Image (cartoon, rainbow, N blue to C red):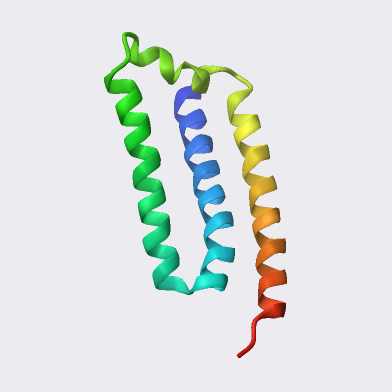
Length: 99
């Protein structure tokens, strides 16, 4: 039960981080460019993780930090900080935008 809760909190935090990054980028460059850039960036991150796990002697050891009891708390804190910063940056960009 605890593992599922940690997994849910982890992916929820990653989703909030993605949303916090996506909103100001969409305001600045538009939805299509933001979606394309976000997909490319996410693909690069996933590729780097896959490459590091694939070429590692201990693949499970790379992701052991997620099993630490403080990892979900740190991820939720990071998600909140990124979302608030994204919101503030998005508001500032929207105020400067000329229609």
